[in-house]
Length: 582
Image (cartoon, rainbow, N blue to C red; front, top):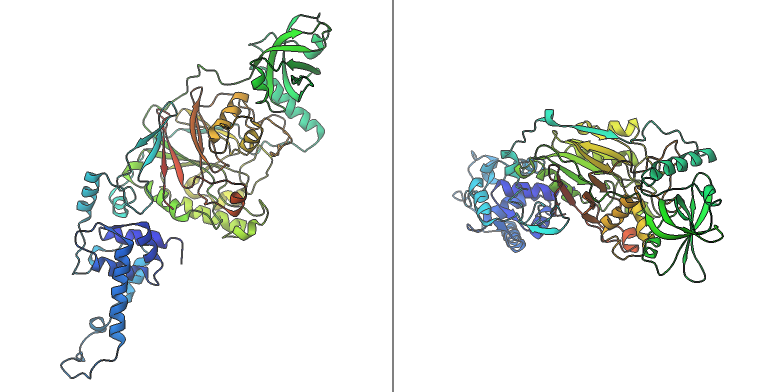
C-alpha cells in the first residue's frame, strides 16, 4: 500500500464534508479498495455526524460484508418478474468500479459521487461550524494545540489550527505572493572556495585565522600582552592574556591550570578552585579563544586569574527585523529514504503551506540531512526504505514539489547528506543540484549566513552540539534543551570550537566556522530535538526532525521530536511551533 493512501482517504472524506479520527483513516487505508470503502462509510454515516469514528467505519464495513455474504448464498428459483430484462445495462446490475479506482489517484472526488441516501453536507457549512467551535480536524496533520514562543523565549499555548488541512479549503484559497518583495542573500559559503589539502601548513593557517579573528573581539576588553612578553614582566604585575585553550588540567590541590597559546608561545594560567570564575572552567573546550586577567606569580612563571572573558554576544545586541509581516518555516533532518521517514506528516505540512493560515510563509529554510544517506552508522541498511543514494534525493525532490511554488527555499547539507563529512561542508554537487531543482532552491554550504529580508540567519546543521552536550557539566545543556548548547556556541563565537573530537574539521585558508558577525537568528538541527529560545536577543531555533525513532536512536536513548515546523515571524522574530500528525 503506498504511503500516500491515508492522505487520499482524508481528501475523499473531506470532499464529502466529513473528518475522521486517525484510527478510522487507518482502517479505510488498509482496505483493498479504499475509495469504495470511503463511499460505503459515507453512505452509512449518521446524518448528524461530522467526524467519522473507527467504530462507525467497522460497523459500515461489517454491514457491507454481511450484505455480500447474503448475495453469495443460493436463492430460490427466479421467474421472469425477478429477472433483469435483456435491455438492462451492466450498470443497472453491477456497480462500476472504474470511477472509484480513478478517485484514488486524484486529489479531489466529485461531490456527486456520494450516495443519494446520505447526501453530502455542504462544505461551506461544515467549515463554518468548525470555525464557530474553533475545532481542528482530527485527521490531516494540524495540531490540536500549537506551541508558540514569545519574544522572551517563554513557551505559551495558543488555539488550534482552524481546519488548515481541509482539502477543499486548499482548493478555495490561492496564495498571492509578490515575489518582487523577496530579498535573500548568502554569505560565508565554502562552496567553490575550498583550498585545503590536509597538509600541516593548512592546519596552522586555519588555527591562526581562528585566533586572529576571535582575539580581535577580546583585545579591546583586556590589556593583552603576548605570552613571550609576560616572561620579562616582574612578579606581582597585573597582566592579561588572549589565547587559545591548549590544555586544561587540575592540580593536586584541586585548582585548575589552563595553558593558553597565542602566536608567540604558551603560558600557564591558574584558576583557584574557590573563585567564582572556577565554574567557567568546566564550560571550556579545547581550542576555543578566551581572555584572562590577573597577576603574575612572584617568579613570573604563572598568571593567577581574577577574571575570564569570552568573545560572546553583547548583551545590548539589537537584532534586525523585516519591514513587513513575512514568515519563514525553519525545518531540518527530513531523512527521506529511511523506513522511519514521516511521510504522512510531511504531506500534512506541505498541504498546510497551501492554506490561508500559511499565506505569509514565503521562505523555507532547511538545515541539513535531506536524506537518510547510506553507510552513515552501523547496520543502517536494515533501516533503509530506499537503498540507492540518488534515488533518495529523487524522492526528496518529489517532496519539495509539494511545497508551494512561490516559496523561496534555502538548503544546507548535513552529516547524512552526500557531501564531505568534514566541516565546513560545501553544497551539493551539480548532479544532486539538478535532482533537487524544484523551485530553483538556493543550495549553500554548512554553515552559511542567509540574509532574509534584512534578517541574518546563521544556518548550521549542528554536529558540534553533540560535543558541547557531552562536555558541559550542567544538566540544563542537554538533548532535551538543544538551544542551551547553541548558547554555548554563540558565547564562544564558533560553531565547532573543539578540534579532534567527534566532529571532523577540514583545514582551509580561513576558518569558516567562526561566527564573525552576530546573527539575528541561529538555526540548527542534527539532534532531532525541538529547542527554541533567545540568547542576548539572538533567536535560537533547533527545529526537530521528520523521522520517527530509529533502532540506533533507541539504543542511545534519543526520543525525537517528529514533524515539528517552527514558523518564524521575520518582522518580530517571534516563533510559533507547529506540529503535524504522522
